[in-house]
Image 1 (cartoon, rainbow, N blue to C red):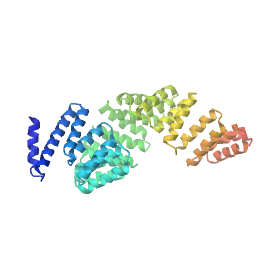
Image 2: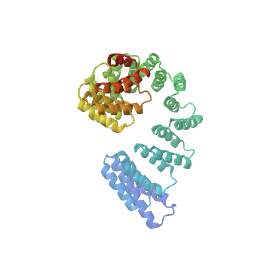
Image 3: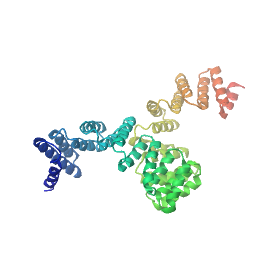
Image 4: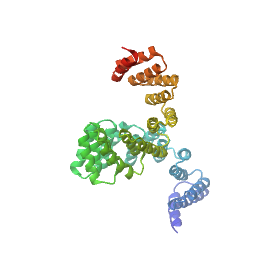
Length: 414
């Protein structure tokens, strides 16, 4: 009955669309198939929904809607390339659809095609320059592609029409933080708190702005207020843990990180930072467990691989550390610290030429290479290349590394 009612409504709409009778029949059949796909999707049957959307496309290939329905389903299933192909076909049928451009921009972001996403965002704006819903969507899209300046421009326009919109104000505050302007971020937080003193997000924003300026004691008070208001929100616990860590309060930092990890159900960022705190407190095995769990969730995270390699090195598991260091270098080939770490591992294995080669690459990549010169100097000395080794130690000392002077006295005699 419901499908018949909807079909009747569709018939009224299509009767004025200029379609020929045969085309009209195909369009109505496609609409029914789309509706059946929607029902299957609500019942959790993605396979059946895909089947209905595909049949709708076959029934009426000149109808953009089933392509977009199938694209949305493919996006939910993580099949972004296939979703993009359907959106391309829909856009050929309806090139002036701001909706399709906006949806394609979102999928391109998921594929890390930020330039393509921005092209679609600009085109959607050109087609529908005054659509407020699209403006709000573009704020998040610009932030996702690393353009907070553009996001702020959209927010300023939106706030001009709704100057007291709390969510827009807070989003502007967090965007100012992305632009490294903690003063404006805190001013927005204070403005929101003046009218809504129990705004958890505003207290968190205020704390983040204070932390960015190095005012960690004040930040801890702001984060604590956010925790009091929303004790199950993991981000506030995490942020307070970062400020405790910055003040050298490792036990408090670890307690807050534990809470964030527990509430955040294994969020990679929380695990990564708890591992750093554990490493600083000497709990290398605990840090390793956190790195392992985080890498299960994000196997391609170069910083995780680097830090796990560093931890494995200190635990004496040199081969595992070498494996992680090589993978980290593959993913971040311009990271001087990764080159230095791999040099350290070669040095531990008495592979002096390889160690020197990796330290040399770290020196080339780093604007502040004092530590790399020091390490390469020791590698030269350990392979009995005294002139080169002492020369590197002198360079390291001249660049400000204090321990290089001691090494020169011990190894070079001057």
